[in-house]
Every structure is written in C-alpha cells, then in structure tokens.
Length: 434
Image (cartoon, rainbow, N blue to C red):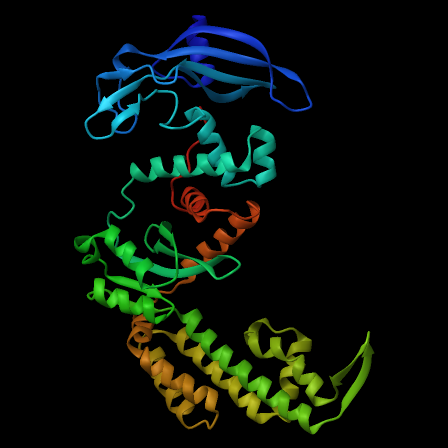
C-alpha cells in the first residue's frame, strides 16, 4: 500500500491527495508546553476543486481566501492530527462569494467529518466532561459540531414523509419557564421535530414546515388537551382525529383529589390541637393526630392500588373509616382510571357512568372536573376507540431530560434540539470506519 493511501485511510480523507506529512512541536498556550503535532498537507482531487461550499456545484474561482487553514482530525494515539490545505473562495450565483468545499470536512467546520461524527455520537451517549477530555475540545465546540452534524443529516432525510399518526407535547428544559414543543411519529417511534416555545405560534411553525398537503394526510393526533394544541390542530389538520392523552386526563383527577385532601387536612388541623417546637429563632406549630396522618397520606391516595405497599394499604383503609368524604374522592379518581383501562365501548359506558357520578357527588373539585371532561369528551372517546396515547412522547421527554442532565445544561436550545434529533430522531451517525 502506498504511504499516501495509508495516510488517507488513517485520517478518513476520501477524494483527497496527500501532499506531505510533517511532525512539529507546537505550543497550545497552556502550562504543559510544546507537544508533538502531526500536520498532513492535503488538497482535493481536481474534479472536486472549486465547488461551492453549500450547493456543491462547480463554480469559477474568486481568490485565494485567507491562505492556508487547518482542520482538526481524529487523534492518532496520543498525538493530535491536523489537515492543512489552501482555502480558496469561489463565486456562486446563489451563495455569492464563498469558501470552496473540501471533501474531508463539512462547510464551515474546523474538524474533519470523521472527527465531527465521533463527537456527535459520543454526545448522544456520554457526559460533557467525558467528551471534552477524550476529544480534547471545549463544550462550546461540541455544541457547534452537534448542530452541524444534525443539520446535515436532517437536510438529507425527509422526516415528514409518510406521517399519519403524531403526538404533540411540551417539555420544560430549563428554569424560568423555558419550554420545547416536540412532535413524535407514533409509527416510526422517532422524534421528528422540536422547537423552543409553548404556544400556538410555535406549533404553527411545525405545520408550516409540514405543509398543507402533508397536514391533510394526518389521521390521528395525540395531545394533552391544552387549548393551544387543540386549536392549532383543528385549524391546520381538521380531518385528523384528536386523541386526549389518558395519563393527563387521569392526572386531572389526581390533582382534584389532592385539592380535596388538602381541604380535609385544613379542617382537621383547625379542629385539632397543635404542637409547638422551637426552630432557631422561631416556634413551629405542627399538626398532631388526624391532621398529621392526613399530611402523610398523599402517596397512598395517588398511587395505583396494585402498587401500594402494605403500610400504604393500611393508611388507605384508615382513610376509608375516618374520612369518607376524602375516600369518596379517591374512588372517583380510580373510577376514571378504570374507564381508560377498559377502552372501546365498555370504556365509553364506564366514562358515562363516571360523569353521572361526578355530577351528583357533591364534591366541588370533581364536579368541575366532570365539566372539564365533558368539554374534551370527543377527543377522550377517540382515545378509547383508537387506543392512542402520549405514552411514547412522555418516554421521549424523559430521554430528553436525561440528555440535558448528561450535558449539564445548554446555553442555547438549538444545541439541545440538535442533540435530541441525533439521539432520538434516527440521525445518529455511525462511528468512523464502522
């Protein structure tokens, strides 16, 4: 094998001419002093020279640019490797004066394709510290590489092709009410779109990207019942069957139950005695007796009966005997959950009986919940008929939170979205040479 071909394979340089290989001692500006560097002088094959860096079409040369420049390649063992070449500019009618494309790197990148692909794959599976130490780059550079690799992969893939059933939800990714709207394909189980925001304007941007023709092909949309989602879907895809997410509907009942629990606790606290306990410069007044026991009854009331521990079962039995008003609210919550477990016509019948029960239960929180459910009854019936839920999209939300935690936060939501698309949208590149 010729040495030039060997170097091209080692560095992942396709359609590249290896002109020369140098070894130099160079200083990175840190306390470690000069270190050995591998400098490989390259140029594109003649047939690939003078191409526009964006559209890739052959264009007339404009000038020599800013002279020679370097691209960081994958390390060779413990030695950093760089490709060095001329960076001429071409004149493109569409993109004006622009740096010519090179076959070993993406346009505008300071790293080779192999190096960028490895960073992108590691970012989807490793922590920030691991990537920065292994690849010897800054975290800001990692975000830039992720956005570039994800953007190229997304441009080469039509993620909206064949969409029929989608799920829409929002996720909080940062303090200060910072949200992302995410859209998942129920059939491919992939994340297909995400954008910062939590309103009609954000979701309208998705349907603008989707286009009216493909929006007309949507058959089912699952969502949590938020008015801004329901309104946009009704306007942009009126033929789609809107399915209310069962988890969110049951969570409405759980919220109503907790309001009842707090009300009963306040009544018990007002009727019972209070214990005083010094706490620094203050004196705390603590509940005793039944009020104290009610304060610790949240999880027995929230959890599904099949998941209760023996102690929680005993706590629930105590509530049944001592606080029938609260226990009746608990039964209402469980009755709604059973309706979604039955599904189909049985579920609709059980839901109708539940609505009748809620209307005459004389528990204001559940009376209001019954009115809210009647408002979304069409989408809830669609859920019972088609069995579509946001369980998949909640799983995607959990994975996005894990990604955010591994990355220790993002300064820019674009980097988080790019990384989520790589990890969950089917755009993850393969390891170089695999």
